[in-house]
Image 1: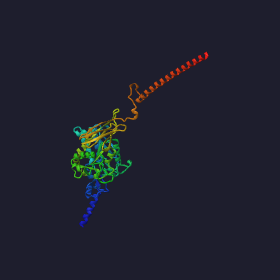
Image 2: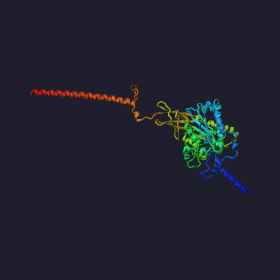
Image 3: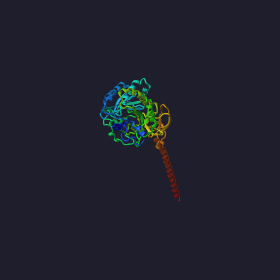
Image 4: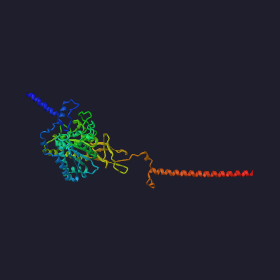
Length: 488
């Protein structure tokens, strides 16, 4: 009988284990697709976390966390306290109508400048609230220290930092992963491999808000904060065949560098025994589809990481100060890396020096970034200690290439592009000051007309003289013939 009860208990426990969810909200269907390796299966299964029991302890686990009303109040109070370096705005509303509040931090908030923009997004999953708490801590720390801390000052003066503490306030209120429609927002974006939810109007309002936001602001890089593991995750998140294996994006080296910045700055993330260096390729961990991370890189030109910042999805609130200290330098250093590394500059036209909103490519990396529309500024994140061939291009202009050797610090390279010369323009001559207001081609044509007029007049004069001479000769001949006739 004891054996029977033991087997029954083991069976129930194992079933519960398999039905659990993943830190990034992984697939609940095929586990370890494409592999029969038992150890791989066990390692993969370790990443599953037991779904929170919504019927027990839901009030207790939220005790000490900011409610949505508390969060809204904290954001607005921050805006009043730090009005000189911030502005508060909303990018939309959740299903239940709660505003998606954003804090922008900059020395010129709301103004467009030739500076990179970075965004942090917290609480993508409703049951992962640590990120929303840490992002409020981050904003307040920068406000309190930007006049005395060099790193805070660097960020305020050289970056436009946008902080969305909660992307999923409804899910937080319901103490569950999905939003009010029970949709996982990190599976609701367009996917490069499989058409998921192709109609933008059928996407969740929180998803549409993010997509519209990136249509308005050109973000250089970003990160979303999750819970349930301790690792910095980078693209690609999925594979074409849904198998779990390392699937690198074109900027794999750069993403590994960015993820390592966060991991090495963290208290213990880089010491992970499961993830070497505390970083992982998403598809190598487990594939997901419709994720926000890949969409940012493909469609918005934004280099995004998915940061798992707490092994426990919903730790006790008294652990939040420790989690803040563990993640503080990582959050700051990742933002500062936008100006401390990579290659930056602007693109100009040699014809008048106006800014050109062109594109920047790196030879050997199949990825193009666009310069800003107003200042034509570009900010290209790259793995340091490498030699790169940088190409600037713009329709109607000749491309220009330069080689750089990128060290540990950032480089500044401006490009001046020459307009392409057409066949018609080759006919033009330098404008003489006596032909002011006329084009060079008009001057050339006018010169030819004057020459033709002179030739025509000369020919006419010659013909007139010839005609007169002929008439006079005929007259003399006629007169002589008349005289001879009279004499006969």
